Image 1 (tube, rainbow, N blue to C red):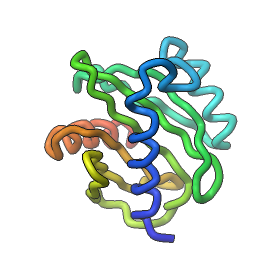
Image 2 (spheres, helix red, strand yellow; image 1 turned 90 degrees about the horizontal axis):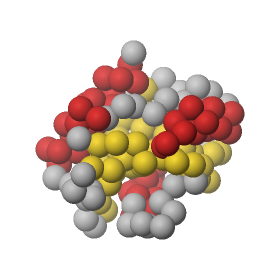
Image 3 (spheres, rainbow, N blue to C red; image 1 turned 30 degrees about the horizontal axis):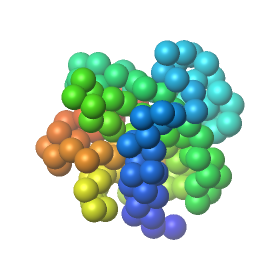
Length: 144
């Protein structure tokens, strides 16, 4: 299964949910513990919502999505200027290419990588440099 497939799905999910001002997430980031507990149960493995405050983004919340190999977790983050990023977490790419890779779908840029049993994709309509900067922080935290 190609790693690029989940990156494309991550870009589509970002494009669908990021512009939604009314209900962008299923569970609010105000209750991060409940969000993480729920996604951990549904994903069947411990989930973590990286803290991106120092990169200028705060957790808005998350949702569960259907994926190519079972459920997918999507965490959404927002910046003060209204810009949003989403972190897509899937089992689909387990054991695949681990290095950072980049793709773009229209205005949505995606950095994606594999760590252990999960594939991760950080998506946003931001510059490649900005997305890479935040992706490196996500990667650093998920290593810990």
